[in-house]
Each structure stands twice: as structure tokens, then as C-alpha cells.
Figure 1 (cartoon, rainbow, N blue to C red):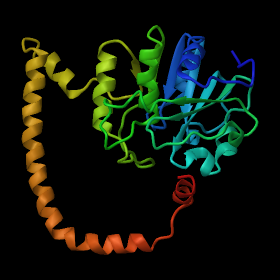
Figure 2 (figure 1 turned 90 degrees about the vertical axis):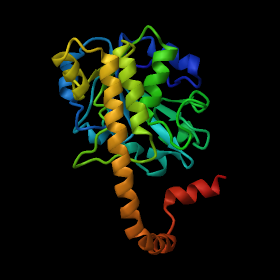
Figure 3 (figure 1 turned 180 degrees about the vertical axis):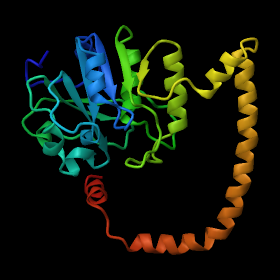
Length: 277
């Protein structure tokens, strides 16, 4: 179902209407756990595949299904714009079923890019910065996939939202950035999955607690969760003591590290953010 015009929505209501056209909205994380070929076979009908930013992490060639590219913004604008990756990323979507680009921001400091900066393709914008105010831990920013998934379940409650590869696990090829609260996001996503608000695929299942509950059916899940929290708290305290001892050893090196970092030239992203303040 290709987009009929060059215009894509510019507000939440418009995007809710856009997504309602599809029976299934499949969000594909940039993760080794996401197998796009297998997903195409498992979800063949009226599915919108939603990809994020550096799609070459999960796409090795052209994708010809119904698709949407979500481009996350930073204070310097959309990441694929200031990194000059727009054409390289969009080359994976050469067919008529590419619906275009959704430029999204999730915190106030981020800046949306002008549509013209993405070239000759449909572009829309969505500002979710207020949507997460007072909910997401304030010292971090929501990941793009988490932000869109949560918003979809609230703005499009009748939609079937499937998350593929949202494992929040490091791999040999791809790293996790400390800009996001991965623990918080996994708690929310698993609660949403357990309540039936979303579906997940390509992630580890069942969890260890599920295995314990299956082995001891006479024990309430709440009791298992409480004991697990007690064990984790004890182990966390032991880890904290070890970290304190380690920090006392490496603390003199932090001054040297800070000095060397100040000598590094500013990145293009940092310069762009400064000029646009």
C-alpha cells in the first residue's frame, strides 16, 4: 500500500491515522536478533515494516515491502542528516512501497530536520518530547524504538504492534549506548508483552523466572519475583562494593582522561549543535 502523496503527517493525530491503515505494525530493531527474511515469511499480509536509522545493520540488500524509515533527531538535527547518510540508508528502499521517513524527537533538546534535508522523498515529523515527560528517567533519553512502540500502543490501541529483535543485549558487532535506560525500557516492554498490548519476536524466551515458575507451580509468581528481587539486591550491593574499590584504583587516571578528551577536536555533530543554539 504505497503512500499516495508526497505529504506525511506532521502531528500525532495524523500519524495515528497513517498507522491505522495497516493490520500489523512491525518494528524492526537494529539487532542481530532481527531476521528480516524470516519476518517477511512470518508476517506476509498488510504489514508495515518500520526500520530505524542505520538500517544496514539488519538489511543486506533492497527491501521491497511496505516500509517506513524512522530517523531519530539529536540537538544537531536528524542523525542520518548530519552524518550525511540519508542516501546510503534510503538506498535500501528503492520500490514504490517505501512510504517515506518519519523524523522523530523524544526529548526537548532534540531538533527536527527540515523535510528538504532528506532529499526527494516523503517526510513527516513527530514530536514525542512531552509524551515522556515525568515518565521516562530524566537523566536518559528513550530509544527510538521504545518511544514509538509505547506511543503506538497508546495512540493506536487497536493496532497489532510487533517488536522484532528488541533484546537490549550487546553483541560482538553492535554496542549499546548509555544514553538510554535499557533496564527501564525492558521492564516496560515486558509488562506490555505480558498484558497483550504488544507482541515480541526474536528475543530470548522464556525468561529464567518463567522457568522457575514452571518448575514450581505451587509457588506464586509474586513470591518468586520478590525472592528474585532480594537476591538481585544482595548481589548488587556486592557489586557496588567491588566498584568502589576499583574506582579508588583508577581515580587518578580520570584526570588524565579528562585532559586528553579536552584536547580532542569537536565532532561535526557537536559543532552543528552549538551553531543552532
